[in-house]
Amino acid sequence: MRKLWRKYLDLLDGDLNTRVFDNFKNLLVCALLFAAGTNALHSEQHVFMGLFGSRLTGWGLIAVSALLMLLNVSDGLRRLAKLPYHRVLQVALFLLYLILAVRLVEIVWNFRAE
Image: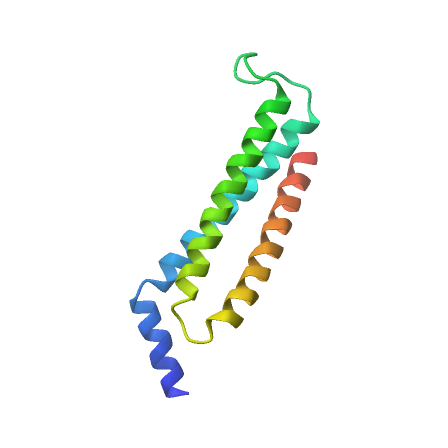
């Protein structure tokens, strides 16, 4: 137990807290962009002073969100690859990340609907 505690303290000294919150913040921003893009697809409004239609804007936001999420996930998986038992951690955290991303988009949609 003491060895595990020491490992945990070493990870905290190595800015584990900052990295986790940065990844979560990036996930939240990507989910908000994705929800805004899908909302723009469902509305028929002109945005940016009438220069672009909602379809183009929606697909653009979805593409940016997907690219940013891919960068965030790949960075997190690359960092996990350096740890022991990294394959199990990678699969588990990727699934958790995917579930959180879908749930965050649903939450944003629900807030938008009210």
